[in-house]
Amino acid sequence: MELLRQQLIAYRPWNEQEERDREELLRRLDSHEDLYTRANTAAHFTASAWVVSPDRKQVLMAYHRLYDSWAWLGGHADGDRDLLAVALREVREESGLTEVRPVSEDLYSLEILTVDGHEKHGRYVSSHLHLNVTYLLEADPSAAIRPKPDENSRVGWFSPADAMAASSEPWFRERIYTKLNDKLSRF
Image (spheres, rainbow, N blue to C red):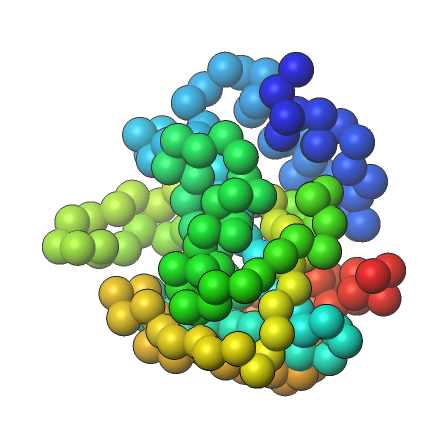
């Protein structure tokens, strides 16, 4: 059985949103669609990271150019079926961190995210879904960080409350980041 399917079956949803999204992720996996590459222009897997300091008092965010907002870090699977490896790679690429580690290899959160149509590298990308899984990662806030200029203009550490407030995207601020912060009490 595929690793992600096993993880989704074992995952205990935090709320109704996660329960519904888990059902849909499992349904899509069972459909045998190509979900691990952007060749599926309707929906594909992404992996995000809620990167926290060891004392859980800080969260790493990047100012995302496309969405013009402070946001978590992450990206497309692009053929990689190890979504934890995708999350780790994306954090390293987007923040410059060299030392980042999973607090747990289990899924931390899951969500299906809508992406509005937009231009990227001079080409139009149609509206689609990101079938997203999130991992809780940990890094030292005193380690050097730097932006990835083609994706973000800044990277910075925030208190969990300030991370939510910094986002200009209401859905993320009110639903996703609130949920991620609430879950921190379990770790």
